Every structure is written in structure tokens, then in C-alpha cells.
Image (cartoon, rainbow, N blue to C red):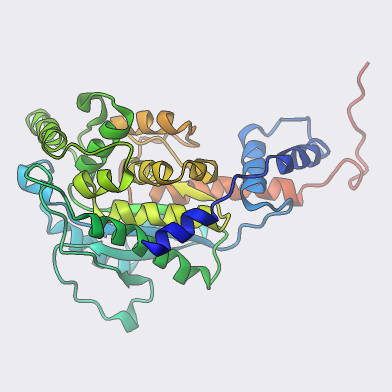
Length: 357
């Protein structure tokens, strides 16, 4: 708990005076003012977050956190929980979707076992991108009781902070959040319902591609979990412990740590959105350090983003998770920063400025 308190205490309000300086610089570049739209907005956002008028995005890191969910016992997923550890090996081998897209944009992927429900057979000497921070062998079935204990919830967040700080020594200029875990859209829908107070039906999607009957069953399981556990929205740890997941807590820790070090945090899809809700309710200033990568096909994601006041960069009908949307968004964010830092000014390029008549 001490680690969590220390990180939260470090998070500062962003300095919007730097936004004005960045705007002045953008307005003097060889282009009509505002002609690069959201790329310019992103550049200003990175300046404000980092506190640097000449920010650089070189070291891109995506944390893909993995955990199992006891709620799968209720038949909420089209896939069995055995897929979770199988995907971890896929991530480590570098052949999953996130690995391909991360290489495409020059990002590093760190795979973290937060709570896979089996003991993984991994040779750490041959898997430099893997970290074992397992809190427990998956969460309990939240439709029958709390998903985890309060201590486990706090441990999951602090494990996320630890992973971030361990990698920080290698350099992080921008961080992306990613997830994997059969059943985690169910937990995310429950978290979203608790914090946004929207009907479960509006927040629950098909996850891995379940049919209509399974969707109704999923909605019923979430309602049962909320009614049974009665999570308190004013207490983010209580919410996480009763209806959350270990990877969700871990990503909340990454988000908090990123904000504490003034590093932009690019949140991926619906599960990352649920993690951001946890982080923002622990410390509201966190929101100013977040950039929403995209709007997921999961129907609750837009509601979550609207609740936090975040506008997604992309809308590509993505629903894979893993950090794939975050990887794509990093490329666009880096482009905006390069416009600010590398494009010529009217003066340096000897280009005539606009003449107002």
C-alpha cells in the first residue's frame, strides 16, 4: 500500500502554460495555422504531459498484462480459459497481433503474468520480454463472491507500478496498455456499470464473439455479481477487489506510474478503459495524462471514454485487445510530435507568411 500511496502523491497537475508556448511554435511552422488538425493537438498534449517544449518519442513500451477470470465458469466466453496461457506463449514467441503491430511502430512489448490460472513453463533466460507478477491463479467467480481480496487488489496495482519502474531504467518516452484474459470483458463491463451507473445491457458486448443466448447469460452474470458484491464506486480498491481482474489492476498501476513520471499513457480498448477508470478514481489528475488510442467494437467502451472525457484517435472496429490499438496510435502521436520538433518555421525556411488584407 505504501508504494501505491507514494506514486499517487507524485502525480501533479499538468502545466497548461506550456500548451500556449507549443501553440505559438506550431503557428510559426510552414503551414496554414491549424492545418494539421489533431496532429497539432497531440503535439500540444505531449508537451503538456511531459513538461518539455521539445519532447522526443523514442522509447515506446507496451505492457500486455494477462490474467484469468473465475467468471468464465458462468459460460460468458466463446473460448475456454486454456486460451489464456496459450496466448502468453504466443506473445513471448513474438507471433501474436500485438507483436506484429509493435514491431511495425518500433515499440517494445513486455508480457506480464498477473494471474494466469496455471503455472507457466517459461525459461526466463530465453524470454527477456516476460515478467512474472502473478498475484494468484486467476480470480474467483465474482457471480458467487468477491473476485479477489482487498490485499490482492492492492497487490495487483502495485505489481503494475513495479513492472513500469523496472522497465523505466531502460527508458520509456510513451507507454501503451494491453491485456489478455478470457472473461475480462465481463469484468470490465461490471466495472464500467459500477462507475458510470449506466445499465449493464448498454455496457456489455459480445467479447470473444458470443451468440445472443450467451450474451443474455453474460448480462445476467454481471447483474448477479453487482447485486451480490455491491461494489462501492467511491472506493476504487473495493470495486477492483469485488468485480475486477488482476490484469485490470496491473494496468491501473501502469497508468498511475506513467502519470507520476509525466509519461504519456496510451490506453487501448475496453479492458484498458476499465483499468483507466480504476486509476482515475484513485487519483483524478491521472486523466490529463491519458490518450485514448481507439474506440473498440465493445459497446461499453465509448461510454467509458465519454465518462472520462477522452476522445479516441482511431475507429477501426478493433476488438482484439493486447495493446494493438495503442501501438497504432503511438505512430500517430509520434508523427504529431515530429511536426512540432522537426518542421521548419517560416523564418528558417525563408517562406513568406500569410498576408491579411
